[in-house]
Image 1 (cartoon, one colour):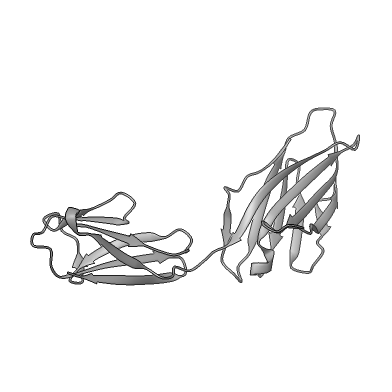
Image 2 (cartoon, helix red, strand yellow):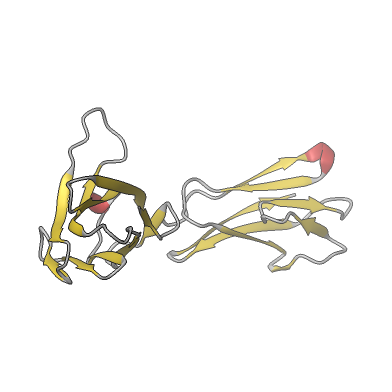
Length: 194
C-alpha cells in the first residue's frame, strides 16, 4: 500500500519548497521495482499528466524531470521536493509504486498555491446586533475584531469561536468596529461605522 502523509490540500507559498512524503508498506515477499511521481491539473476537461520523476525501486536518489525537482526513495518512504514552487506547480499529485510482479498502486494529493487574504467585508444584521466578517479567498484566514482600535471587551460583545461573527452587547450600537483578517502572507481589514 502507499499513502501520502501530508494533510491535504497542501498549500504552498510561491517561491518556497513543496515537500510531499509518501509511506510505502509492502509484504515480506514484495519488492518495490519503480516509484513514479506525476502531476495533473486539478480541473479541466483534458488534464495532461506530467511525469516529475521515475525512480528504480532500490535507488536512494533519482533524477527529476527538471533541475528543481528532487526525489528520494528510502526503505518505507519516498519524498518529492520541488524548489521554487510556482502557480504552475499546483494540481493533483500522484505517486505510483510498482512491485516486482508489475502490479502498481497509486496515492493522490491536492496541492494549491497559498493565497493572500483579499477583499474583507463587514456586514450587519441590525435586528440582532450582529456583525459578520467575510473574506474572499485567502488561505488559512484568522479573524480578529477591534472596537475604536482596541480589543473587544466582554461588556462590548462576544466573538464567535471561528472569529467571523461579533455579537454586540453595547446599546446603542455606535462607533467603529474593525475586522482584521490575516494569514502567513499579510493582512487586510474592513471597518463598519455605526
